[in-house]
Image 1: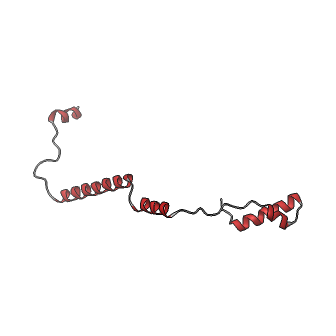
Image 2: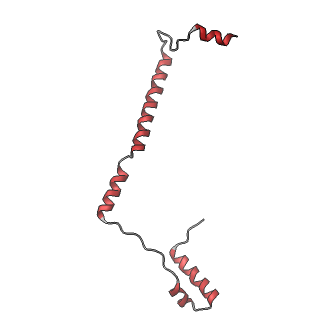
Length: 102
């Protein structure tokens, strides 16, 4: 849903009050509720907000560390595909293979 600008909101409110109540538009505009003004922030709060936004959160650090580890593992596996391993990557007991032959 689209937001109305404060000027249009006040104008439409005044017209609606004029139509319903039957008062003059200037009187209707005087009765129209005003929208809240912008909130002011003191310098300390502004500095704290800037500091909070500038540094990554613990969740962001956790995600970045996991992503970096994942990329390193992908790189290692990609490099391992290019080389022939000297020993098998997976050792399977013969008994386990017989289980699937039946």
